[in-house]
Image: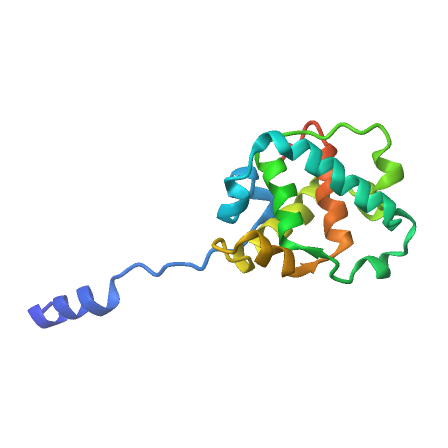
Length: 166
């Protein structure tokens, strides 16, 4: 092999090719949640009351009784979703004995694995599309999340053991 061929191989041919990583929600966990600074710096002591307010709002809007196709219109903003995600990130559990009567059956009927996949698909999208430097007012104007997505998050928040088995 000539010197030129050796250099050519070093420069052009022998570099390892990197494979594009595929998104896998099953391998994600709460550590993968990236929150905007305003939510990250929020007082954790206020979170349980804020989550209770989200449950009350969800219940009062009667989403549990609506058909699935009516739960697919954006009605929630990125601040509300971020608050629930912070609650999950801090590994807190919201105990409510009547979760099945509050949350849509689209979320309560899912297996733990499927619920995990739905939640971390949402986490991935939140991480990708929500600007982490947005202020609270900007996040409150960013309405792009559906009641169905919130139902997945709220259901996930009620689970004590969130780990999925392989």
